[in-house]
Length: 372
Image 1 (cartoon, rainbow, N blue to C red):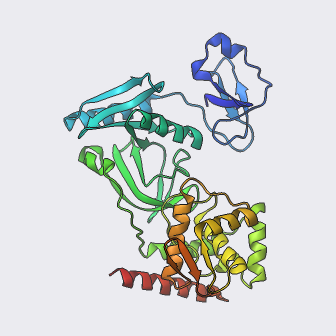
Image 2 (cartoon, rainbow, N blue to C red; image 1 turned 60 degrees about the vertical axis):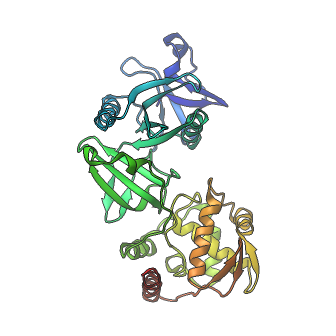
């Protein structure tokens, strides 16, 4: 890892000379550029100077390697075969950046940014904003290992928690490009998504550039997702979730038997909690603070979440919270109009796991039948 914080100063080893690196204090308190945990400055004789985590978390430091360069050349070759003008490692002096792969298509400017190593949300967003200043759209191409179980995918650290409507992954071993449309983040590491995977030569460029059609989709594997979460998802309770546990127990149920209206797909990353967890927070807020026939707004719910649980949303969380409130409207818990919602009835609390799973199935069937 080349970057770390020293207080409020960013230390980027890639921009320092050997003499400057040699003068760095090894005993200073450095923190990770990505997760803000303590890191150690290492400058030995066998490896290039880098920062490393102590203890359990360990991000391997890697300079831009052969894989990164290979992917850039593969993308450039593919674009040239499509008769697109392309430039690898184009310098952008106006924003002090070097674009991995720059190209223009149908009168618009784009860059492919190839990313494998973890990066902070701040740096991720800043890179997008910098390019936007000069009229360039960033298309991220992520690398790393992805594992699949039906429509669930475990992602490498670089993709985790990215609030993107379309996630694009390239596998260098198979030269296949996988596109995850509107991924639903079950947790920071795991998504539920409909994915298309093809060899790069068979991909149409427009598929990566065209706007996303906003739609919620789900199939029967979602019921398996809910069942697995009921049975295993609450095996470890964090300190910040203990208050939620207490609130649920006071209302006669444990977290494995969350009301069936909890746990429905919402694209993107809304809260800094797994999807089932933050939706349970919302339902408990309704149970505690809102009475039938009361009218409230999304901003009211956000205020209660911060006040009661210190649950802070990411950028766009209000939109995704509103998506979940629409689910509650589908299930007859709420009605709504022009940004205001009316609480119609209490969510139904089931007493057994069997009745919870059956209710999940009933709600799923209702949704499927309505969409036909």
